[in-house]
Structures are given as structure tokens and as C-alpha cells.
Image 1 (spheres, rainbow, N blue to C red):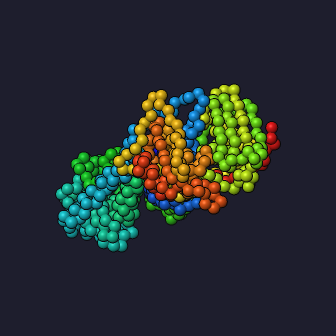
Image 2 (cartoon, rainbow, N blue to C red):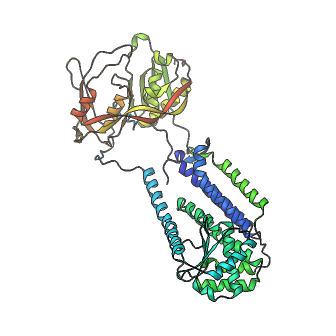
Image 3 (tube, one colour):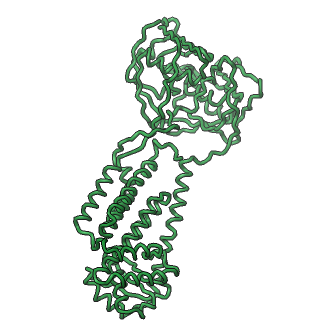
Length: 565
């Protein structure tokens, strides 16, 4: 399964490729009684669309299409542990620890690596074929008699440049190669062919030259290497090569009898049992289809007209313009209505009850909180205060108490979901979520590893008294430390940037942080910790690394003061 389909350009491109190739194959089947050259033009246009789609999808302004995705969920600042600083009353045990492991490549990186490996393997036969063709051109022997025939037949095919005719022992049958200096390469036994057989073979190959089939097949094969994982693309390529051969067969039938040409193709099938160059256009597996088409008197023949080619090109351009802007985005799968509290009491607190730190007490059936609406939103959505803006002044100035109860036990995460409902119903809160690139600190394990130990079963922690000018706090998880540094529960530890946990430490630990503080400066009311970075590294074995990270950001669009009850 591809990671994050809502943010994956690759997923959108794969869907567009599927639609394009399916339409092309269906169109070729519906036009099976039309000229082979027209079907070939249709498939060539499809390969052109496949080549342009990735670039056009990046450049075009996106039109988003919601796709249900079970895995889609809002991104938070790290993994918010609601019990980290305020343990649940029932004494539930947090998750077991995970031994720190070296960071592993993400799933997206593995997918890209697999795609690159597949593309390289798929390109190998193409590059080998180019080398083989170059070797054939250099080691082939000129054939004057064949050259004379080709020079005489070329004008009738609409070719007004020299097409070299060569003989080579390694070839079982005729083939064409080259763009600027095209050549027809024949097996040495062509010198023993009858005049009609030789004429038919050269007419067929000259038609390949006129149409530029060698280049178009190389181009289509390169597109297949890009989409090596897609079976419909390979099906389209095989049909594309077959229609090229049938188009040239039609040119032969314009000046030859069908039965004689069919017999010649049968003889060619026997010779093609030998190994052919990788870029040879004639395919032994398709010769039976070609023979049947040659003998089918109901089949229309001839070249594709200018009108048909123009219509195909216009359809391809329209398809690119239509598909390029479309972008798949993840939409969470619809679920049952979110849980709600059975009863909620909201009261405005007097100013003499104010305090900068929020308070929170909870058990599985009750949640009691005091604080500002600003602080409630931060807790409910598991974000830091730097990820929220736009609220009216009273959302920060006024203090409220919330006392909510539920008849059924609820987990801490469910409590926060129900708190969102309280904010929406009682405070009229409406949020708009955005994504912003924000400065942050990545909390990582320093060289030498962490300098705190894992808690033993039954072991508890407590905060210790500190000397004047020193702050001491004991945390039972790295998540709790990150939450404190992000000011998730209030308090004065908040740093100047978001902190994101990159330690991969998920167990229960005794993390004792002791650091000096200075009095607040300015109007921020926040304590200053001049040695925090140093103390984290020397005392805990952790370090804060500056970075910029795309994070969810919430803007308050509406909020209204509640009626106390």
C-alpha cells in the first residue's frame, strides 16, 4: 500500500496512467476494423500522454479529489500522551518500552528505491538493444543489389533520402534502424530470395523508415521502463508494436497479393525462431495475428489521414489538460458520531482565581479543567500554542472551568475528542486547518545514548525540592518531556520553537531534568532557561537540533463566550 495517498503525487499519476492506457486499449479494440495506422496513431498519442503526465501533474494547479483512506488522520506534535503529566486515576500502565533502534528508511523512500531499481532493470534491454544495433550498423556489409532496389522503391514510399541496405550474418530476418541515417539490415540469405519476396521485404522496411517506427518504438519502450510496474502499459506497448507491423503490412498489400505475402510471413516466422536483436520490431509471437490480418478481406487498409491524426492529437491534448490537475487526497473514512459527555458544566472564573498554568484532573468517567479557551483548544487538538492563532482576545484573557462527566469509561484520547465537542457546542468554536512550514527543534538521542534509566515495575517518581534559581522536574516518558517543552499543559517550560520527538524512546523512564532559570523578561511571563540545551545533553543524553518542519496549523474562524451553567 502506498504511503499517505492524500499527499502522494505518485498515486495520482498511477491512476491517470491506468485511465489513459485503458482508454487507449479500448479505443484500439473498438477500431479493430479501422486501418492499423489509425490504431497505431491512437496508441502513440497515449504513450505521449504517459510521458507528459508526471510533469503536467506537478505544474498544473491541483483539483483535489477526496479518496477514503482508513489511515488518514490529523498530524499532531509528536505522540500526545494525555496521561504523561496527569496520570489516569485507574492507574493504567503506559505502553512498554521500545529499545532505541537506528532510524529506518521511510516507506516512501523504499518505494522510490524499488521504482528506480525496476526502471533500471527495464532500461537494460533497451540500452543493450541500442548497443546491438550500433554493432550491426558498423559490422554490416553493404549490398549493392539491395541498395539499387531500395533506391527505386523509396520515392513510391514518400522517402526522398538515402536508406542504406546492409547484410549481416547475425540477423534471421529484415529489420530497420536509425533516425538521421536509416538503414535496412537483411540476412545474407536475402541474396537468394525471389524478386517479389525481396521487393515485399524492402517495401515493408521502407514503410517503417517513412513512419519513423524505430524511434517511436524506442520511445514507447522507454515509457514502459518508467511505468515498469503497470501491466496495462506493457499491454499497450505490445499492441503498439503489432499495429506498427500491420501498418507496414498494409503498405505491402497495396502492391502485392495477400496469399503470397502471407506465405512469406510464415517463412519469416521460422527464421525468427533464432535470436533477434532486442530492438528488432518483428515479433515471432505476433506473426500469426499478422497473417490472419493479411488474409482478412474485411480489414480496411492504408495510411492514417491528416484528419484522423489531428483528431487523435487533439484528444491527447484534451486528456492531458483534463487529467493533469486532478490530485487524490485522503479523506478519513466515515465513522460513527464522535463520543460526547453526558453532562457538561462551564463556568466563568473570577479574575482573582486566575493563574497562568492550566489545571486538569481526569478519571475514566470525568474531566475537570480550568484555563483559557486558548489552552483548552491546545489540549483538545494536541498542538502547541505556536500552531494556533486568530482567536479573540477574550479566549486568552478569560478563565473558565469545565466539569464534564460520562456514563461510560473513556480513554484519555477519547476525552480529548469529547472536549472538542464541548468547545464546538458551548463556545461556538470553528477552526480552519492549514499546513505551514515552521521552525522547530528535533529532540534526538545524543552520541553516547540516553543517560536515564527505565522504570522498574512498581517504581514511582516524584519531584524534588530545588535550590533557588533552579527548576527540577521528573518525567516518566520522553513524550511528557516534549509536551512540557511545547507548553501543552501550560507551565513555563515552553521554548521558542516547537519540539518534535525523534528519539524513538517510547517506554517509561525516570527522566530527571534540573536546570537553572532566570526571571521572565518582557511581557511574556515565561521563565528563561539559559543552560537548558547544555543540561539536556550532559545530564539526559538528549539534544535539540534546529530544523524546519511542515506542521498542521489551526486558525480560529469563530468563537463565542458561553452561557455559564
